[in-house]
Every structure is written in C-alpha cells, then in structure tokens.
Length: 149
Image (cartoon, rainbow, N blue to C red; front, side):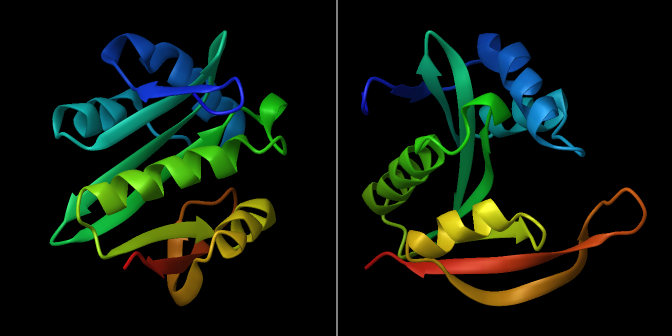
C-alpha cells in the first residue's frame, strides 16, 4: 500500500481493465495476447489500484538484468505520482530478484515519461531508430538504463 494506492500482482481477470487503460493511454497499445504471454511467462506484472485499476507495470528478467517492458497510468490519473510509485515498486522488485541493472525504452516524444525516468536516476544510454509504430512513420526510442548496485 502506497499513499492509499495498492499495488498487487496482475491476474488474468484484470486484463479487461488493463486493456482499457492501455488503449486510453497509447495510440498503439499492447494486445491482450502480449499481456497474457507476460503473465504466463512469469514476468512481474503489477496493477495499481484505488477502487479501480489506475495503471499497470510489466517487468522481465534475464541474466541479472531487468527490463521494464510497460508502465501505463490511466490518462485521467496521470501527474499524481502514480507512475513514480509504480516505477519505484518495480525497481525494488528488480533489486530483490538480484538484478544489477534495469533497462527500458521510451518514445522520444513522451516528455513526461522521459522526465519520470531521468528524475528516478535512469540515464539515456542509446537510441533505437524507428522502434515504435507511428501514425505517419515510425518513431525512435530512447534507451535508458540504471545500475542497481
């Protein structure tokens, strides 16, 4: 429980609400199949609750590295600190699971997410050209990393 908001593991029964938030937040949202795959593969899938699902985060692990695959807050509840709470939570999980670093990609146009990650101590370590789909053309991703030890 963080400031009246509960973070708990995502379950299959949560997917319709998760997908609703994902579709409200992103022009190119994840599909139900992607979320199901993450849940079945043992990725760390979390939801942020306060009477309803306000957001979600998905974290994967490989070779002492964590990768934040998805962090989404319902647009109606953004800019209230929920993204920071979710990010702090998954970083804590990564540390507990023995990850020595954590990585993520973010759209170059997503200024609020870039600010969140930079303020949490992530550093830009690269750029992936044409990584994300776009309305007209593909968009670059900034690659961020953070050492956890």
